Length: 608
Image (cartoon, rainbow, N blue to C red; front, side):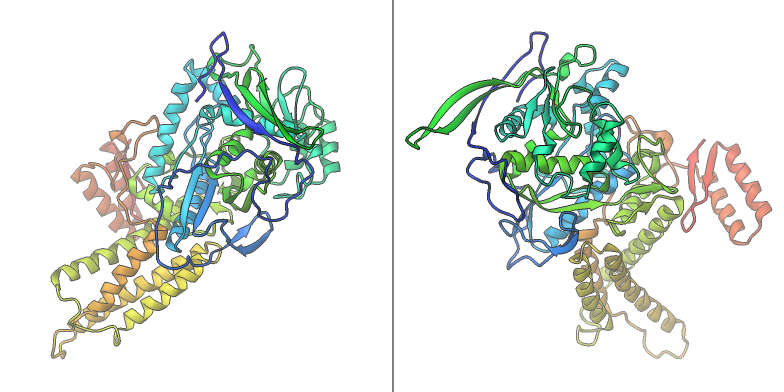
């Protein structure tokens, strides 16, 4: 673990072995790393393991690398290695970001459900231009700023019931690994140091760059770059109109090729901070062959120079350290396909002489209106602003996990209201079943599985559910299966209620208890994937402290007289007595509260 440099530039000495170049290797399928790569695979045991009997069930995913839906074939089944791109911790993540993290969660839950053991790593970017700028603006240290937003991120993960990764490695704690990777790339002819001290990846020397996850025209890239200074022009030309991200950490400096991207940024005293600069030292063991074709080793001490890592380097270094040179799955937002993920492939395969990742999964945007939600557009909502109540948070989870992950998702009050309505229906049937089971200890006496219509429905829909989730995480179909089971239970309660009202019924009608028990079991089983039956932890304010002022009808202490007025107003609206409804709203306002109508759900009451 390297500490940031002081004014005298602290350094760390590490050792790596570099062998002859593999720069000409082109990969088309999974294979083990060639002998020239440095193996840094971790032996740590995954935290999320589910040992199940038999072989795991097959899962098909849309692979952005092949642009087809193909079965997952793990390197070491039932083990699945999975790397996902985490947040840049300079601000609170917004609900668009959390669609990605919820997609990772559904993917992981599905893999676990199907019988795989998932070893999941998710990085935290805790040094880049945006972080440095915010530290300067707020006059706080890099550690203080990033710790603050890292903690907020973990709080939000917990609120959304997201299963944690095995580790969340921070960029600043993996400077050694990044320095090693740069020197591996240099040995293989793919990295160079500019006159001012920065390190760059030589794109023109990497076969297939820009054609893995995207199909970029090299001539167009060169043309786009020629009209703009530095390398940013190339990225702007490639990304324009495509929905892809620009390089989030652009850097103007001398470099050999207009498309080359930065691996290591040389120290600039007019911009850089002393708590965000490192000076790593690497002892390189170079293997060569002498005239007798015998292998010899030579130890060399290398300084890559005082500076800090570029945006793309950390993911390649962390994936190699924790998961090895080749991984099964890599997931992220669709905007990361280029340049970030394309650059990861170039770095990792260029350094490791092995395929980097066998399957790439990308989720679609969250839109506000017709535009992608993003901080750069200024149309973003943090989770805590968009979902101020526990009910809102849980509804947002359901809204995302019940959608098709590759399609755009519109975040609207109507969509969130519909999700709340769905959850209320799910909660209601769960409570109804719990109540009748408490009053009927012998739930097997009224029917059996051979005569229960409900059991037959449950078994059919559970089978359909498993087919749906195994088919590229088809969660809309999975949700339909869930509600078919709910509908069967609701129908049973209505049947018995109707019979009880009929005067000529000789015997008290009984519920299909065996069927209802099976419904309860099925809901619990499906929830292993949905993750919607849970109690949301206390939702915290934007700065991380619980706020009593954010209390509302679902989570706080609203005075009883105010609630009476809200109920009266709802009844007036149902009766289309708009004048009375308006006068009741005015009374609520006079008492210091606001009422907000939600289509398909209960009104939200909050303090003014």
